[in-house]
Amino acid sequence: MVERYVISIDQGTLSTRCILFDQQGRLVSVAQREHEQYYAKPGWAEHDPTEIWSHLRRTVVPRALEGAGVGPDRITAIGIANQRETTVVWDRRTGVPVCHAITWQDTRTSGYVERLRRTTGDDFFLERCGLSPTTYFSAPRLRWLFDHVEGLRARAERGEVLFGTMESWLIWNLTGGPDGGLHLTDATNASRTML
Image 1 (spheres, rainbow, N blue to C red):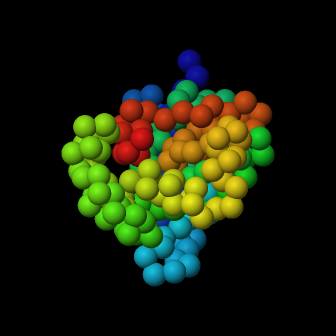
Image 2: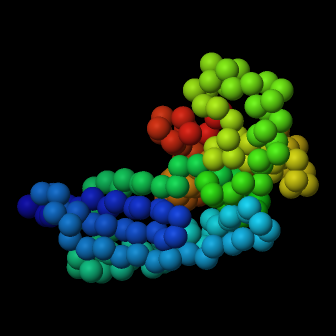
């Protein structure tokens, strides 16, 4: 019988890690690579989603497979743990992000969030999405992007861009990207967007 493996991708704030497990659940190999942190202004925290995807595809997964001495044909499944609230928007035809990902640490939307809490109140949001507005969640950042990236709102209305947190970005790329990639998330990640 051919031994099969499961890949666990941990896409974190500072790095991306790939852990390979065998059929008995034993850790077989690990590879990790850090990515750049961008702080363009006070309170801003960003990542380059293209860099993260490149590291995963070209370095992290190949090194983990090499460490175990196996090829991709021996992988049965891939699981992803990720920065749940980090916001990525990309062109659905080209796969090019419209800008850097805005991370869960970013506080640029604090003024907007405070206005929402003051004018609309927490109860409105709690009843609809189960969360009170904070800078931590994706929806205020998505609104900020619509207001500050020229033409983005119109592109979104035409269906030209996709939005997701880091696992959506990685899944879309892992399943084909512009050539039929799947735009997916799971309920636990979706529940952290405020959408």
